[in-house]
Image (cartoon, rainbow, N blue to C red; front, side, top):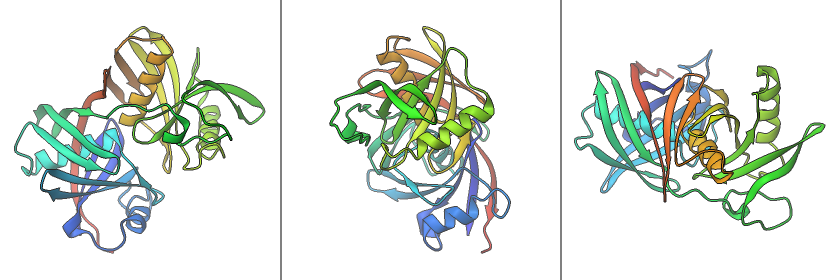
Length: 275
């Protein structure tokens, strides 16, 4: 079974076309994404040709299916343009949470730059979902108990759930990873959550660390960058155009009626899965 390895600022995915898929995709993701016993990746993406665009399903390294991924969409788009399957500068992916448009901004060999429409963010507890026993129209600076401490968190959905924490100085590596795991599995998040640790640099720049649901630490995240930028915006900390500094490079987020993220994606290699 052929696959392609891609990454968007170090957040790496394996791409398989649906017609070539062998076996159940969740179980395949657990095997093929393993860093030691498989090809190694943060997730597996299964794409298919459809009448109005391309089908898009994404599975985390633990085999769970995610609703959407900003970096994953860019990686899937890079695959389609690299293979010559996508012909126009605008394409559409049909995700679990609806259609998402992608615009090709540039290409240099097997490296690409895209803009992706990530949809309209949602703040209501029922849309995230977030359940502390009350119905909430928004969750901004909510006092969340983590270990022996209480942290103000802002929770938002950009098609998938995100819990955003702000710091004057980002926590140590050991501290934020422990916090990320605990928050991901916090009982108030019935479907678990992604977690972003944010430092505001200035009114147009933030620095972010990412803990992804079903994966753990990732070098970057498209949906996480959007969630962090939007959370900073609604708290009045940044404007509508935000540079997000990740451990592997920068992406740009625009806050309008919909969130737009711009960043790179690269096709790395082609492989054959023998199992």
